[in-house]
Amino acid sequence: MYSKLKIEIISGLYNDLLNHLIEKGFLISSIKSTQFGVQFICRPQDYFEIAKTAKKYQCRTRIIQRKGIYFLLKKTVCRKSIAVSAVSILVYIFLFSKLIWRIDVISPDSQINNAVYNLLYNNDVYTGAVFSQEKNQNIIQQIFMDVEDVGYVTMNFYKGILTCKVDPVTERKQYLENLASGNITASQNGVIEDLRIYSGFSDIKTGQTVTKGQLLVSSTYIDRNGKLHSVKPRAYIKAACIKKYTAQVDMDKTVWIRNGEKAEKTVLKTMGINIPLKNENIRGFSVYDTEKSFRYINFLGFNLPLTVEKTEYYKKEQADLKRDEQTALAAAKDIVHTLIKNDISLEEVEGKNYEYSVSGDVLTLVCTVQGYYDIAK
Image (cartoon, rainbow, N blue to C red):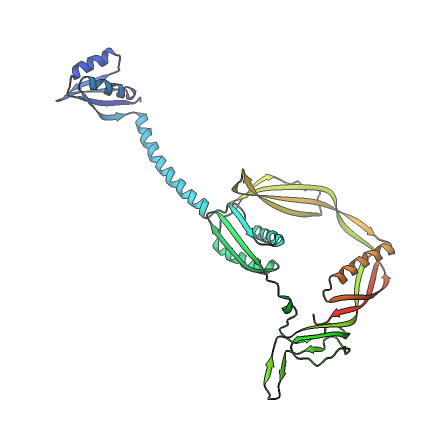
């Protein structure tokens, strides 16, 4: 059914207007006389030309009725556009108020940054995930417990941006470094070489021999009036000590090592939906290592609510690791040297003595260190 308009010509020289329209070839039908003029049906595309011509004959035009598919669709599309606009507004509100578009972790330490990013991802907080206030509070507690050197954490979500600000632990000032909350006891046997009591109560003296666990500085004492006094003791006590460090190395053992073969799996994540981009093929991988990494999608500087997770599978094979005695001894020495280097109480080394023994396939090395230690730590 084609479209058509029913119009009315009012006043003026409408008879002359009809004759002119017919002469010009306008398609006019169903002509009917009215009290003040005439009615007829014309094509919609001709209406504006008819209205313009009617003014030359002092006539006025008025649309009485519209018929046809065009006008029906136009009305329907107009209504649908309103509905689409309303739905779009609701979608935009959801996207920018609930969906995470960007994650910013702010701290002065890159190791803390990486640890927090990994913790967030392991808790399904990534660009494209739906924000949850309850999960947000739980993650703050996890950051305190699982990430080292964290003093204070805040997490705020606003307009699609999740900002996590982490303040590291404030280091103790040097004069408070050795401050203890209870009594200070000797960490090992030794002869006291240097004694400095900053706070607390002690009756030990330089040159005195002490044993491990012996009370060095007390946090309480009773004065002559019978009144109990309590402080937080702080002291520096340097003693000449002998300490042993032990390491064991297997000379013959079976280990699993990577043989160079690997497979990859890639997944696109958004709004809790995992879209596989590349599937792994791990047939024949009886034993393997798995490494996961993730990255956020950025297009021309604009962050998209999408995260790509990449999983790599490394095939491992069994291999026999054999060491001769000298190689095992060198490896044991490296372990012992690392232990000595990481001993924060050691201040000065006077001498070292190495002894080792072999029992079966295990080499045991004992390093005896003569030196000076802070036995108050």
